Image (cartoon, rainbow, N blue to C red; front, side):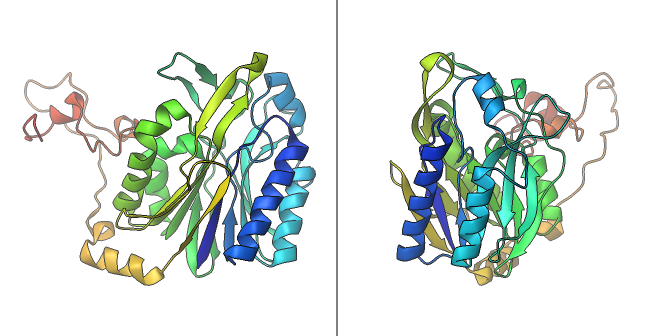
Length: 317
């Protein structure tokens, strides 16, 4: 299967964003002939004030972004993993950050609403509070296309390995992650996390990002990292976007997945972790429970002091 990632620079201007998305997708169709196209997070709207963001949300099915994506998939006979759109839901004060997937006939095959919301302070002191306008989703999305089982995630979800563990339980071969990673976090964490997810779950990992600056509330410019990429199940980057609005394309081979899983049969070796039992002198020390393992480090890849206190591993492990 051939997959093309569309790296955009979306603004608080839906009409311009949809023109940009269509132009890049048409370029991909003509030059790359992909079976599946991926758009980034917030391809339809990025930035603006909270009030503008809420007003821009559309009911689904319907709305300009939904119709454009649906019609494009049908017209060109391809799968379209439509990044994320602002979804309005009747009776709710907040909106959803929602991926919609269309098949080559333009039929909606599923939606994924972003689960982990980006409420952080970046190293440059800029605060992000996605939950002020966006409600969290609760359900996973897995669908089949081109002989692959595909799992969906969005941006900040990347940091939470339990989500990907659940996708692995559903036997996915490919994870698609539309994103708008900040420049501050992306330069240090983006590639590391994408490659780690590919390695630890032995899947292809396609991460499609926003690039460049956009205008937030009060006219403040904020910067997205870009660097859209595809990793193979061995963790090698097999396609990467350059700076700018552009396209990154990779061909995925199911045999590569089989070969990696045969060499290192992690699915067969993976263990469940019940609550740790108390040991003498450690009755008050919490063990690495499932709740503890939900922190953003990758299943405690680098053991924290709490986990290490329950093992016989040296501190330098």
